[in-house]
Amino acid sequence: MTPVSPTDRVTPVSPTDASCASQHCITCGDDGVPMTVVRVDEQRELALCVDEDGAKSTVEIGLIDPVAPGAQVLVHAGTALVALDSEYESDQPKREVPA
Image (cartoon, rainbow, N blue to C red; front, top):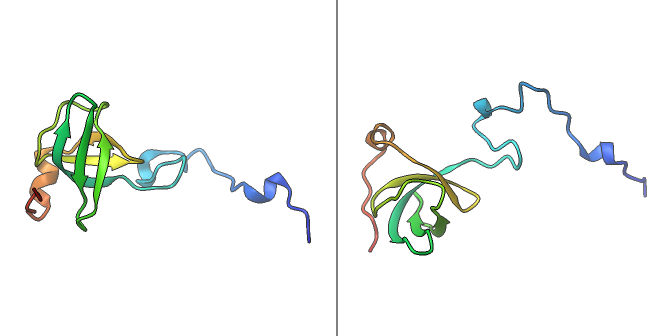
């Protein structure tokens, strides 16, 4: 078995790659996922959210302004990063919020 050096595991990143222009998290490579708020637990700063495929997730909402059921949020790593504005919502197909 050939030994692996630490540099074999590192992909060089140029300064232009480490930006938001790629639409991916520069730490883990994941995308933010638009989700719809179904229920809010204000005391614990959590919301039950659903994505476009119907998958439900508990999301931390402490970093954003208060949201209500039906609001759209951008979620990354289980945390809502921003509430999506009405311009984003008007571009999306209307979805029923599950009870």
